[in-house]
Structure formats: C-alpha cells, structure tokens
Image (cartoon, rainbow, N blue to C red; front, side, top):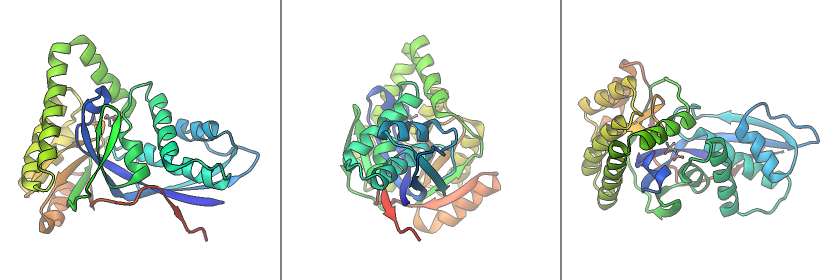
Length: 289
Ligand code: MEV
C-alpha cells in the first residue's frame, strides 16, 4: 500500500484561451489530494472516469482510497490532482519505473480524453511539478515562484469543465468574430502580466480585465461576480474567476494584512473562502502509517 499527494491549482491568467494554444499562467496551491493505492486482483475504484483511466493506462488492477482537501468541480484542479497522485501511487505500488515527466504526460492524455479532446496540460503539469508555470502552445515553462497572498472564493455552484470548454468551442464556431478577439485580448492580458509578476498591484488590475473577458465569452456566473466585487471593495489588488467558470471558484490577489477581511467578505456573500499561497512541491510520497 502506498499514499501519494498532489496539490491543486489556480489559473492566475489565461484559462480557456490556453485550450487554443494561447498562453496562461497557473500556480499550485496548498489544499492537496491524498491517494492510497493497494495492489490486488480485484478493481475497487468506483465510477470516476479519471481513476478508471489511470489503472487502464498503467495496465494494473487494485483498490484506491482518496482523501481530498480540494473541493471537487470547483475549478481548483481536483481531477488533475487525483489523476496525477493516482498515477504516481500506482507507479510506486507496482514498481513500474515511470518518471515524473511521463506521469505528467499520461495525466494530460487522460484529462484530454475525459474532456473530449479539448484540454490544456496546465492542471496536470502544475499538479505534478508544483510551483508556477507559463503554458503556451501546449508547452510548459517553469516560472520563479512568487509569494502571492491569495484568497479563493468557492461560489458553491458546481460546474462541469468539459461543458464550459464546449460552450466556448460553440461560441468560437458560431461567432468567431466575437470570440477570437476576446481570446486574443486574454492573450494580451497574460503577456502583459508576464512583465509584472513582481508587482501585485499591476497584476490585480490585469486580473480584473481577465475576469471581464471571461464573462464576455460566457463562462461567468453572477455568484462569482458577486464574490469578485466583494473582494475588490474590501481591498483586493484584483479578483477574477479561476478555472472553467460557470460556477466554481474565484481568486483574489490581496495585500497580506487584508486576507482575513477579504475572506470574511466572501463568506458574507455566501462563498466559502480559502486563504492560500503557492505550493512549490508537486506530487509527493506520503508516510503511510
Ligand atoms: C480548467 O481549469 C481550465 C480550462 O482552461 C481547461 C483546460 O485548460 O484544460 C477551462
């Protein structure tokens, strides 16, 4: 029996646009998912398409126990974290000798399959390696970790990543003259953000713009916008939807001494707040016992 854990992630910039080869910036964050795998001839892994695919890809059978501190279907990369930690645990339990790069690639293929062919490697890369990444044209580049103070607001409105990705694909197909310039504007915001990674005040303003652009392509939600506004009026540098949208989570970039106040405002507006920061560690083995 072996237990591995992997971190969640937030998109700071560029979600959805990354699905079309545009750049994005994402960061691993503290809540983690813990996965225990035990060898066995029988398969005990419920109905998750991600977990089923992990055992199938690795060519083994066994049982699995998941303990997640990450809310699922909320835009914090819980399916990628489960996939990455499951692959790493299977690899260890069965001594399959795959390296981390290979596991990250398999995890991406699994995500892509479940998301019907449309996905970026962002969630799986960030969860596998930890820290901060710039993703462009499906490739990842590690960025120097930044000590941002983040407050996440979970709208508690559940969403489906595949469906939200599909919605943008439909808009892109039916209204390319509207959708494409917005995706290009998101690219512009991400590239501008790359110049100001050390300057949370400027980054915050860019997050506000990114939020409006996500609304423009139809992946907003009134509850998310309410939480975003609550964070901004209580002193956040900026705030935006993070992940697939249509529900799920928003993030606020905040001055350190405003974190509690902003978390409080999010809770007043019926969101669940998580105060967090970067997790520089990717998937790792936990002590069993
Ligand atoms: C989901 O966390 C982010 C999306 O950009 C999809 C993806 O990158 O695979 C919507």
